[in-house]
Image 1 (cartoon, helix red, strand yellow):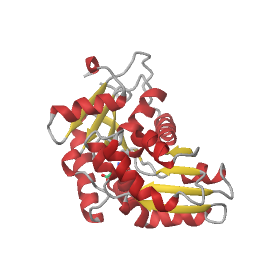
Image 2: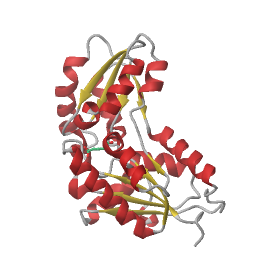
Image 3: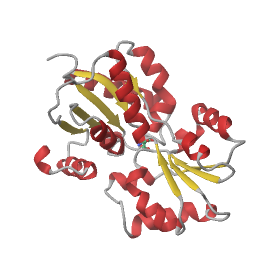
Image 4: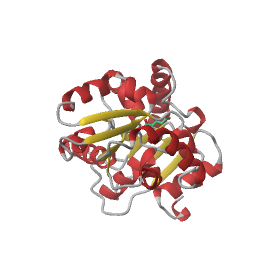
Length: 262
Ligand code: DGL
């Protein structure tokens, strides 16, 4: 197998990173992908930095046994605590991370109120404070740690009473004055965008880092000359550490693919 034909590895603490995978597949459908969801250890967003780093190393080591040419960290939490160390550790492997899409949200809503929903770790981390410092004079940026929200998505709770009850509780204190934009700063959250919109109850704009990450991945592959030049539809292999077939079914469902692609 040539380097070009190798797979792009994508990983997350669970099924959330599939929101990034779907952007990758839509932008580069001819590439092959191997997705690893570490649902056994989810959530990462409330663990210690050391634990998240060790789990990330473990995930990358495992993915390296699958014939891969690049790693996409489809997790804001891992990116915020470990991306630099992981790049130092794997110097020959392109590693692409995802971060909260604060820049477009602020630039398109200057003077407005921008709510950033993310895991407690992402919001506490230095990387996020630095990002906030860059834009804080341009908008009223309100960080909102959402411990527990990724767990609901892991359980397939995308719409309905349970997710709405959770969202009503966390969002209630922030709905007035009116929010202009919501940054979905955890890759699990794009799947519950409709529920968030329903609970907010007035029009807001949503931003997530999925498409930006997919474009950056394409740029890095092109730069290294390892884009797949084959024009056939590529494959998607789903792996989940829980070893439960229902997680694989949920994964394909979130990707919006037929089971026949398994
Ligand atoms: N999907 C992850 C993120 O983007 C982490 C969710 C979690 O495991 O807490 O931050």
